[in-house]
Length: 204
Image 1: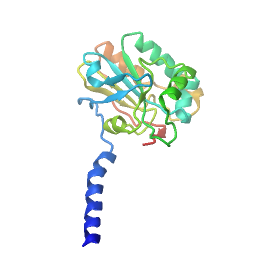
Image 2 (image 1 turned 90 degrees about the horizontal axis):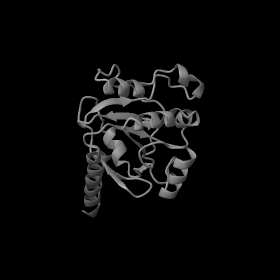
Image 3 (image 1 turned 180 degrees about the vertical axis):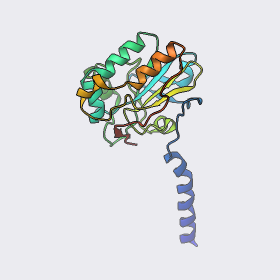
């Protein structure tokens, strides 16, 4: 009887845990998933905080060569600076679990933000339990999402159309994030609203 009871408990625990391991998806044209995460300075950010405003979400892992491609070249910081200068919010999210590649404690995250010259609206959001990443279906670093003032996703996917880790390709690449923001701010339709994200897998 005890053995049967243990098996039943195990099956129940697997049933309860499995849904949390499944990646959802932030789909263009639909409402963005809610989130509430604390940044490296201890401030909490939620989707409601950005109601009525534009918001870019960017997934980050300092050890990923594709992240290094965009930060080492200054490409990501230039985008952050350009669009935060146009009153667009930009949050950079770390969903690496404790003990996994890319995980940072708050003090470490602040040091990395400084060394990488982060130009986002806040220090890194620390999503160590992966709840925000899974809600958005973030699969890679970087993985990019744009949310409009109505709280709808208008773009989800890669930063650009070149999945090489070589920063030399950036000038010739089509930047999907910049194109989507420029079109949206001009009242035009986004030509590419979704793309396949490339990079290193998010270390949940």
